[in-house]
Image (cartoon, rainbow, N blue to C red; front, side, top):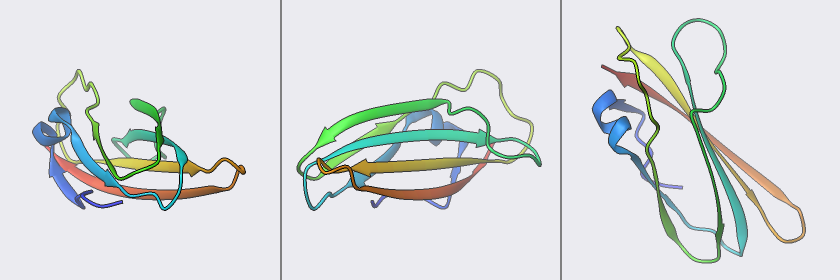
Length: 99
């Protein structure tokens, strides 16, 4: 997985994060994007996507965030790749988002 920034702006997040995924074999990819505005853990994912991949692909993840947060917050991107045998690999990235 490449192309996931450590920091971004709210405008860029709303337009969509572009994530390049390069699997070594055929996989079913589940992507989830959740946010945390204060202290407690990450809430329900704002966005979930599932795709079957056999070759490199670019995912565009653009969540709908209705309210404008007053300050910085964090977003968590979690990708779970499952191969036909049922083996799973999970990749998680935390992104700091500023208004």
